[in-house]
Length: 80
Picture 1 (cartoon, rainbow, N blue to C red):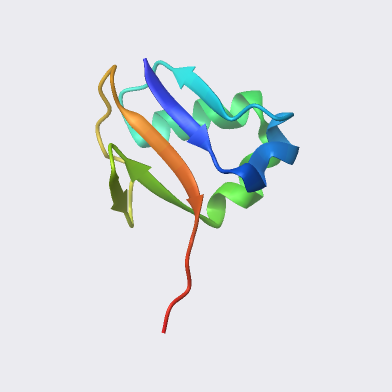
Picture 2: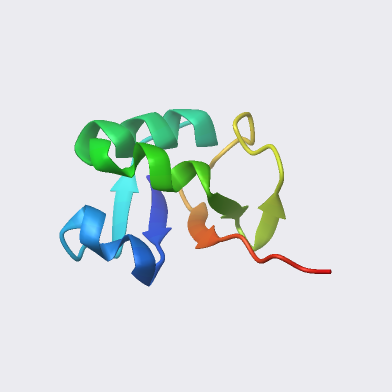
């Protein structure tokens, strides 16, 4: 199962849970499963970057996951 890690800013939506194992084939499936458990994350997740196995993806929905994948939901960083 892939493991999704929540940034500390999401703790108020997850009841303090910082990670969760989810059986998912793609990031899109993983996010849907997260939202079933924590529907209040729907809006905050829209503002997060998604890193899969150490690589940040702009459009992560169809990125394939393995049983050993680590998915991190992290705040986007503005630059300029």
